[in-house]
Amino acid sequence: MNISLKQENVNFTNYWNWNGFKVCWDVAGEENEIPIIFLHGFGASRKHWRNNLEYFAKRNFASYSLDLIGFGDSDQPGIREIGRLDNEIWSKQVRDFITQVIRPKNSEKVILIGNSLGSLVALTCAASLEDQIATVIASPLPDQIQNNQKKIKGNSLFKKFRDRFIKIFFIFFPLEIILFLITKLGLIRLGLNSAYFKKDHIDQELIDLVTKPVLRKTSARSLRAMCIGMSSRDQKFQSSYLLRKLSVSKKVPFLLIWGDKDNFIPLFVGKKIANFHRWVKLKIVSNSGHCIHDEDPSVFNRISYEWIRNLKTF
Image 1 (cartoon, rainbow, N blue to C red):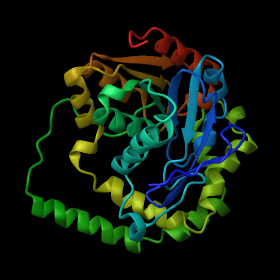
Image 2: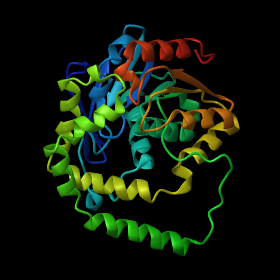
Image 3: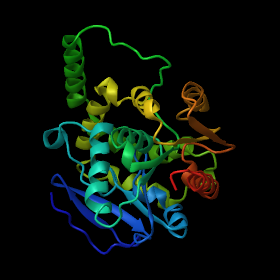
Image 4: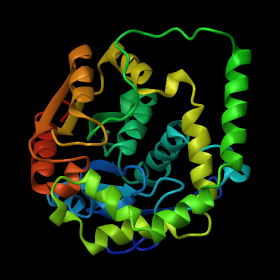
């Protein structure tokens, strides 16, 4: 695979060729000592970390943010081009980003910081790269959490039937019409109002960065690949399994930062994770919603920095 880069500065977009797909990424303080990758949530992009990269760059962190495939300004492939999009695929994208973009310049362990879907991708990546990941900061962590290892009943024939049904359903489901209505009826702003507890943080820049990718002609086909991929994932790519895998070695310190006003993933999910996995630390932020890093960036940055600073890894 070839790497194609533009001028490397947070004010300029960098391009990376990953398996034939264009990936866009930003960086601040690339020559700094400790690498961090910021991973955005569903519907967002690398620009959602607009209030975080410079803070860490000033504290000797090489701060990277990238658009996951299907989001932001990165390519939006459909099922014909990529088959499916899920946290397994995105974690492979992050792993290759570490190998091809970060490693030629920096050999230090990488910090992964994610918001929602980005947290799941960070967890997935850490589970396969334990020796290269310094810590994961998840704010918050989505996915169903089970206290006990669930044994899948039935056989592979049932799973094949289910996955086939899911694929057929989403192939014929009119996502193009749904996305058109979302943009025309102002539902993006409504969704942001649900995600953010502090409504004054919903500015035009935020609305634009969420809306722009949806308006692209390829957005519906990419969303279809996501719906199929995330709905038919294997159990080993779900949060419960991945946390159990990490808990065996406890090599990767894990911090959850959760807003007590999160309407999308309620706080009780975070408490359940921390209660079952005692090695996971939970930090609750009062009067904050689903996107603490953008809604309360000073609080998020301080909590994250203090956690990293106190790690024995460094």
